[in-house]
Image 1 (cartoon, rainbow, N blue to C red):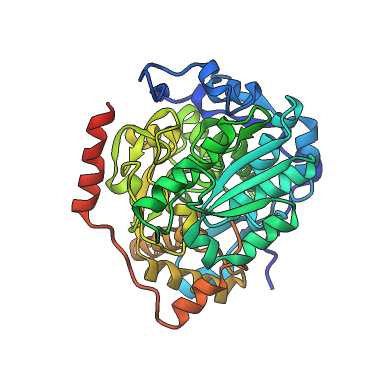
Image 2: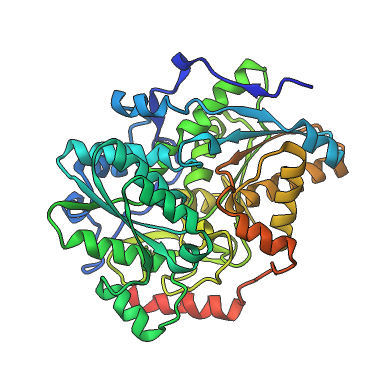
Length: 452
């Protein structure tokens, strides 16, 4: 059996996050105040976020120190292992080398604690003892619940209703770590009540759950809001993934030609790709970064690059990003963490500038890729992660056809142990491809004219 696991010594745990804003050829556009439509300043964000995170949001410093308290908690599972997928390569008959970064080894089972721990730390340091948030598939909700538990903070999670029922054990895990979890839309907020009045059977969406969590936090002086993706400081915290990969590849004298991650709000894709984009921009490395999204929510591949709200109710600042429109209500696919109407402004600007690529796949092919991976490498991936696996397999097959010995890296952003209902449905033939109609996307994007 070949040696597959590469582990860095603890002393090599990254001690700084990488901020891609320092190296982007074109800076992202500033967020706009939802009321005045003027650039939002620190005071506009202060009701929701601690000043340390606001400073990271706007920073142009290339390297930002990771606090020792955060490193101490990271060390429970970081550095995470990098594997070469020998068995998958053999099954595909590809000359390509396929590596994956295993982020499912964190206590919460995904990459999300990389930012959850940091956000809880900065809030606690500034005297905030309660956080509200949203969650789609539940990985982020579990991670923030875990982080709040470490820092003795309260946590309230608004979980998208379709995922709340599809993935009950993620809710259980949040509650084990002390969080209160509610199926969104709820009757606890005006945003939720309005959504229920319009559609009592609403499946919910990440945009709507964000509205509820923001509304909850904004009305309380002792409570802040935490977001698991999209914002700049979240992308920053996740770069520990790619930074570790670079050092791990040095140990075997390798470097990837492709870096692939699934894409919803952008956090795990940014986490693995941004450090390599640093090399692409500053060192002229010919690496290709590919974000993979579902056909049911094709933000980068079919969305518009324009200002939009991050939530349904319009509480958040307007962000310049690829978007399907904040009123977009995606189908209830099993990859709940990718059911978001917008994309990280940083990821969006990089896509606009041609520095990254995007692909979209249907559910059937994604689950087929997940089973191929589980049956060759022995790891059951989350449905979100399976999109990255599908992307990696497609690239590996393209290499096979071209006879190219390329090196592929993808982010295995989380395990699928709490997603077995989705696999049951796939094995029973109940999973079908869902491609959102173009006319509905056009209608949703057209509605943005009224907010510009």
